[in-house]
Length: 174
Ligand code: K1U
Ligand code: ZN
View (cartoon, rainbow, N blue to C red):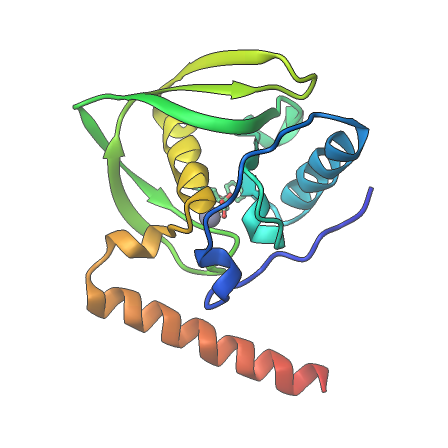
């Protein structure tokens, strides 16, 4: 399994819209396996292809608990077809915003259609953390990060912190 490098905000690639996937083949399945293992290692509960610099509509998610963490969803071209009026607030993190967390309000329930690991069309009704995670990952595919839902001041402070973190890491590497 290849471990992939996760892009950190600010990075212009994270702000680009991902394009649909046309063919599900072994090369795509290898990419999905690598994304899943990168996500487990991070560790995280979701990863979108744009976060590893690939501008395709592809997401992996596993919200199962640590001991038996092997219940992944592979979502190819996920499309949200229903959002509930009722909303929920979850504390969100993001592997592209390391160390940053915020309470974000989103529709409690969402329904999606997508293509699975084997190229079969599927539908899924999600609530709770799975629903939040799906919406967070679909946002990534559209170049949206959770900080975009915060006040301008909070968002600017987070981006400034991450820029400084990146600068000090660059100084260590060189
Ligand atoms: O998309 C990402 O950057 C992954 C992100 C997904 C997410 C988390 C919380 C709410 C919505 C979406 C993460 O996985 S951040 C890390 C995280 O949540 C976590 C890490 C270790 C154990 C459990 C959770
Ligand atoms: Zn994220």
